[in-house]
Image (cartoon, rainbow, N blue to C red; front, side, top):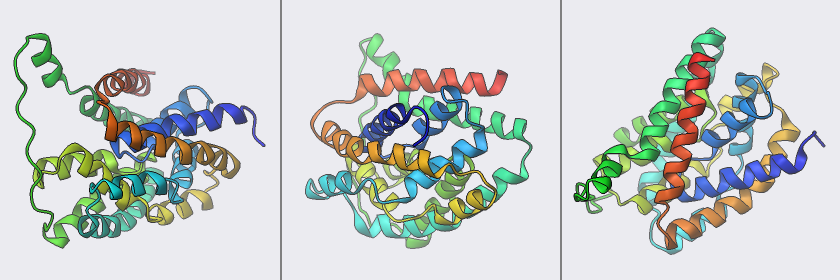
Length: 260
């Protein structure tokens, strides 16, 4: 059992809660915390995160969304197929880049993620007491399959590079272009990520000695319970405050990667 085993399980619970709430897979929590608080090298943290996310740990969250009618299987399947190819491309790109370059790219990615969580335009509108733009109503789910596969490939590249599940790409695309509501986008994203889509990337990292298997297992134990709790929160409460606090945390970590 690794040092700080309890802390790793707690990390898994926290990652799982945010995964279930926002459909992000949990890696955007796991990688920054492994590098920042556990002192694990970036590529090793990425490989370990992907190994954790490879198992269907979000099954209970997916079931909760499915029962609520917020999982669109015809969309989730082609996105999942694209994720498998994209994760392999992203993992190989991570090993082809110099460490400092990878850190800067990851920092820029975290700034994007922070923007998605903070939603500064909506926040400013609230401060000014003006109404934000109305959220689009959920539209048709019969997008062309090859475009959905492409979405999966792009999300998979981000997954293989940064150790995330890919939901930070999938959820905004589903909301913006397929006009899903937030909960349907999250549920469908988690459904796509339920398959072992990161397996090609995990093999690449493992063969390079960049996967801490026991650490991944400890995080995974917490992730199972956290994802279910996060889904229940998302389906029952407004997660706005949690999103913004986490967005601030991501911004701080991003600046550390870029300028540290």
